[in-house]
Amino acid sequence: MKRNYYYLYDAAHAVVGPARAASDMMRLYFKNPVNPLSHTFYGKSVAAACEMFERSTRRYGKPAFNLGHTEIDGKTVTVSEQVVWSRPFCQLIHFSRALPARTPRQPRLLIVAPMSGHYATLLRGTVEAFLPTHEVYITDWVDARLVALSEGRFGLDDYIDYMIAMMHHLGPETHVLAVCQPAVPVAAAVARMEAENDPDIPRSMILMGGPIDTRKSPTAVNRLAEERGIKWFEENCIVTVPFPHPGVMRAVYPGFLQLSGFMAMNIDRHVEAHLEMFQHLVQGDGESAEKQREFYDEYLAVMDMTAEFYLETVDTVFVRHALPKGEMLYRGKPVDLGQVRNVALMTVEGEKDDISGVGQTKATHDLCVNLPKDMQLYHLQKGVGHYGVFNGSRFRREIAPAITAFTYQHDGRGSRAPAEGGNIVPLRNVVEPAATAPAPAAKPEAGKPRRRRGTGAGGKPHPQAS
Image 1: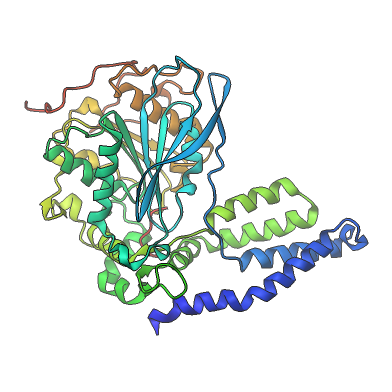
Image 2 (image 1 turned 45 degrees about the horizontal axis):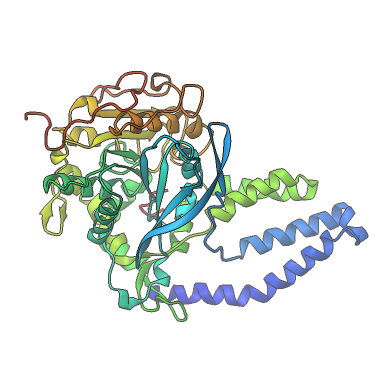
C-alpha cells in the first residue's frame, strides 16, 4: 500500500477540485466592490477564508524567476533568461544582461541550486544579489515526474557527471557556488577534475550551508538518517509516479513528502503565518498579505527526485559519511579532497542553521589538506538560519559582498572589482576567518594573478537541503 499513496495524493487533488472552484467563485463574489457585503467585516472574512481554502488545497506549479532587470553602476540593465546547456534532468540557465559597450569583464558564476524538493527559483534572491557583479548561470533541475522512464536513471554519479559537463561547457574562468545539498557533489566533481588534471577546473568553489561532514554539530535531520538507516527510507519514502504524468512508473521521492518534512520542522511558525495572512486579508493590509503569498507560492512549489539519487545521497552523505572518511567513490574512482590544489575555497555557514549544523561545511577546509591557506576563507554569519545563508537582508548586506570580494580576488583575469560603497563592501567588515582558513587581504585586489595550475603545497523530517 505504501507505494500507492502517490495515486491517493493525485486523487485527493482531483476530488477537491470542484470545492476549490466553488470557493474561488465565492471569494470573487465577496471581493467584488459592487457587492455591499464586500465592505463589511463579514464579507471580508468570508473572502479571506475562501482564499485560504483555495491556497491550502492548490497544487503549486513551478514559479518563474521574474528577474527582468538589474542595476549596474546606477543604470538599469535588461536581463533575459537563456538555456545554454540541457540534459533530461537539468538545464543550465544564463541570465544574460544587455550590458553597455566597453563594460569591464565580470567573473562568471555558476550557481548550483539544490535538488532537494524545491525548484531553482528558491534561489531567486541569490541570483538577484549577484547580477550586478557577475555573469550568472544557475542549474534548473527538472521535476523527476516529468522525465520519461526511457531517459534512464539519475543517481549521485550522474549528478557529478552533470557538474563536470557544465564546468567543461563554461570553461576554466568560472567560479562555482553550491547552495546546501550540492556541496558534496560539487566538491567531489572538483576533486576528480583536479586528480585528472582537467584544464577546466573552476577558479574557486563557494560552499554554502552544505552537509560535507554531518557528524559535526548533528541536527535532527542528520540524526534521523543515522537512526533509521537507508533501508527504512527505501521502504517508506519511495513511490512510483502514476499515470498520466510523463514519468509514469519512475521510482521517486515525491516532493509532497519532502514538503511535509519541511513544514513539520516548524509547524507552529507556518500555522502562525497563515493566521496572520488571514488577518491581513480581513484588515485589507494588501502589502503584508502579498508578501505572504509570494513566500508560500515559492515554498509550497515542490518537485520529485529520482529514487536512486535520493537514496544514494542519504546513504553516502548522511549515513556512511563517505566523503569525510575518504570512502566516497565516483564511477569507481576515489574522491579525495586532498587533490584540490588550485581551486580557491570559501565556505559559508549560518549560526542558527538547523539543517546543516555549524562546522559541517567548514570541515571542507580540513579535508583540503594540500590547498594553500591563502586560497581559503571561512565565513560564519551571525544570527541567520539555513534560509538566511542564501537569502534575506543579511545575505544581501554581508554574505553576498563577501563572496563577491572573494571571487574578484581569485578571478585572475583582470576583472575590475566594484568600488567600495557600490556593490560590495570591504571584506574585513563581514568575514570571520577560521583558524584553519585565514582571510585574505582586507580589500580585494583587482586582477590578482592566480596560482598556476598544477602547482600547490609541496610543489529529512527527511534529509533535505533547503
